[in-house]
Length: 269
Image (cartoon, rainbow, N blue to C red; front, side, top):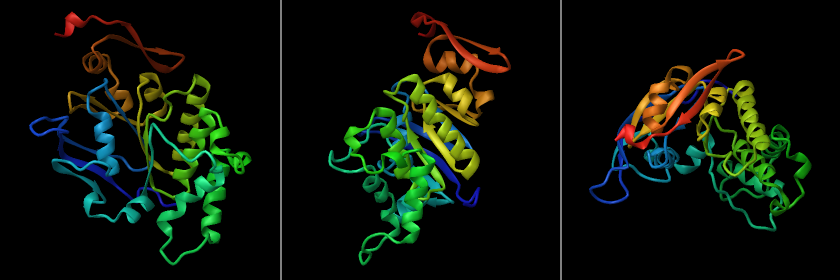
């Protein structure tokens, strides 16, 4: 897989669910290829809406989402899916579907209406995705029989079977215990390091963003408050303002941590 092949950018993006309202207002940024970028911000800041615009699930009122300088609205869905794979926060599958059958669906963008069954390339991609995510041992089990952490790895395997250059991940650690959260995030870090995948993920945990991100984009009231390296962007001033808290940024054994001392709503009115 070639690195730095695809570039993803947002140009003057605005969106509202109702006429006259704006959830996002003139948002612009570019994502660094081959690196991990985290979208962060308080509830209601617009990051989930932004994520859905990046996936093409929503269409902007104005502005563009650009893939290699092309508006994604002008890219066929099949071609889009060959480049960008998406793992949503909530995922569902039929109870009687096996892990392997679900992951095989990741090869759909590479088939045409005359295709029947899978070819050797499809089989290799599916097998590789199962092995990388350590889900090969569950291949013949029903999705419904798996734990939350196991299911998330299967959904990640489905995304990898698409052979993408870019992964879009929407709070995939939500509802997982700490062990499985770090298992998933370490796997994502490994994929980024070994396969040079570009990763854009929505995270709530600031310390996980510090540990697992190269870059961060912090949203506030539908706008980009700060964008840059995670080390630069995750500062006391930005966290205090974005989340309306009193944060303490410190280092321990050479690692940066964010602690919340307290919150005082009146201080931010």
